[in-house]
Length: 378
Image (cartoon, rainbow, N blue to C red; front, side, top):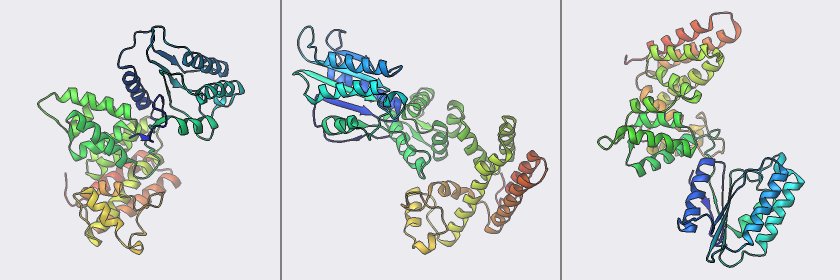
């Protein structure tokens, strides 16, 4: 996720934090190399691993940092002290321990007095309790950059991941087919480091001659996660690929996923989104080729006309992305057919909960019924 930063208060005092651990480490290393000019002879600058095993270890690491900050370099000149990968500033047992707090307070006291001439300090950490006095001191006195993971529990997370993926891909000279991008987002997840790794694999795989990533490329190289299986199952159902949908359902059942869980994660949401997408296309004539135009058209509707649409949890508008993904496939159904599918889906869900019917058979039959309702057959 792009960094949140503020204007530096002290150009010799830097803090890089955030829940996106891979990106925090990457950016901290880049800053350390910049501060040292890429010249670390092992004597001038000092790196302290801040990974503490317990509160006593945390205290000793803070003491080492203090000692290093107060010690001038052996051969003169500037010195950079990097306390890296700190794991004792969060709200956990080690972070709350009195011995840890004593060490952190000692470090703060040293920093409050001001760094000696020519000394620069860099601190990097993934978990920081921002309610504590130490964080408030850092935020007020240091040049701070924060890199947090995208919250996939919030509506619209796919948009944020998509922008991150496209930005990183552009740096590599890669472009994505629309469906390839959708699949990549679901497979790669929200971790910046994981996204970067998967893009580098695609870059090497495609070579210099071909720079557009296809859906087949993504399937070939990016591992299939549980979230991706759910996405893939839903996509196969939308497109009428009965064989693929049944294969994925069977694989999930064999992996001891519950049939009710599969129904509610992979089928009910897909059917609901297809139905809403079809209603939107017929009732509001929303532009369907461009996401921004589609989202803009829905959010401009009077509140009385969009109240039935799913809303973002923060109240900022319609949760457009899942519906937009269903738009093109919704064109292959008529409204009456989707109404029938909605009814059959409800009956199948009830059958899974209240009857002793074979769960595999119930899911297979429903998938076939959805495919049969398509006007455009595969």
